Length: 222
Image 1 (tube, rainbow, N blue to C red):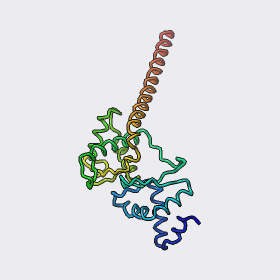
Image 2 (cartoon, rainbow, N blue to C red; image 1 turned 45 degrees about the vertical axis):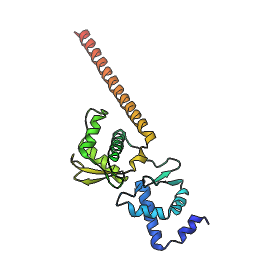
Image 3 (tube, helix red, strand yellow; image 1 turned 180 degrees about the vertical axis):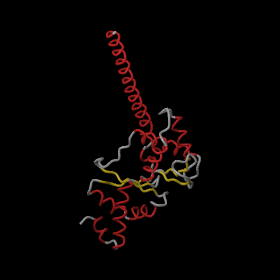
Image 4 (cartoon, helix red, strand yellow; image 1 turned 90 degrees about the vertical axis):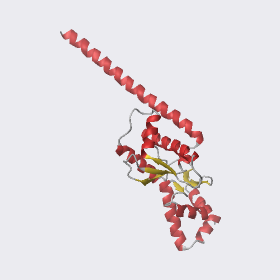
């Protein structure tokens, strides 16, 4: 029997139940963040029994990335399966939150939370000139709730639809988009948006051509 399996058998029944619950939470949320109050008990439990968790997940081709500097645990599929693919709008917001996190973190002491307001997220969105207008409040709410479910942020005060609402941003954002990927993400977004513009331009040109053909036909009929 493998060492981690022996260690698991030596857990109490209560600890085994906690182990099962923690595994499910970790796989469902992807991240456990020490600074997040809801995550902290599970984070500590994984930290205490790290080899058991790692051995158990390795059997299913998963592993735990343990970033001690950020105090973040991440469940990662070795074969890169079961990954959440963000759409364009979600990716834009993810990039904005990562940029805001970096800006805010520079001005804070190590013990302080990184906090951003809803209007700051909106201002950053417009400042990047990625899109000409903001998405609807319903869409922004959906995206921010989604990120909260992955322990990337939490609503601290107010309502998701309120520009004055405040959010705690977590260091897990640095693991979703690390420094190496930050510039690449900007480039990919710009390329994708340029591709969208080209499609729109082509459609507009096709419409103009169709209109010209209709005018020619009308002249012939006359």
